[in-house]
Length: 300
Image 1 (cartoon, rainbow, N blue to C red):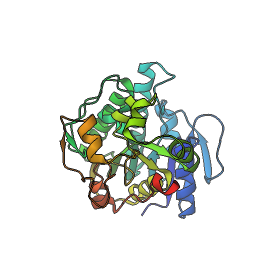
Image 2: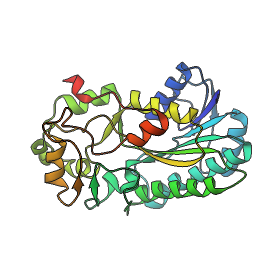
Image 3: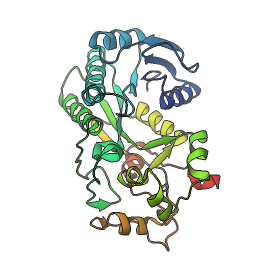
């Protein structure tokens, strides 16, 4: 069981929550980030440029970690050239996997994204073959952020094939939009969450292309902790979602109106949870004993 965890990008919004949770659970934590330290949860801090292979190796060696959670990538493609966004996702992940393998770090969790399927930064509607989607659904990204997420997963496949110099357990976490309490109140409490309200909003395309998916930090960090403690062999991709969509319209209606060509196998309006997510998280439950519990509906 790992005792020490290096978290790259621990200065970021999600990274700070991960560090706070893991530290509270008794892990020794090390934040590997660029620039000055911007959190007070970690036990140690090592300034690291994740695109410099030598710095990544040296920082991981210095951290003496048993596991790595790699979050230190450009979070959105809005403010960087496409090649920089792609490079951040792919090369930083390669450096982490390579250094971890050389240093004998057995467990690595990578921040993939819902965008591996195309997602919110895709200019056109994403391809949806069936709902809810699961890990077998095809990936059809075309934007640099999404392509980078798919590519880092392919790199993880390659490392998992190695007989030496590779982590034993690699998890690619396909994170949707992650909200904390403040962001959840700002986003969910006042706006019209119905399909009609969504259509009238400026971010309708993004909501549609991300299947109205989200997850709260409390659920996200619990899942990260489960990946740190995981002991399966090889590389696994994991879809993540809250226990419902972000819409105040039943999932069956969302599917019929917005994804008419998809084979819908989700709940009906008469089921116990008619707002069930359009993402299947049963693999996370089966492999990591994780289920989401936090819903935005408890705020209203």
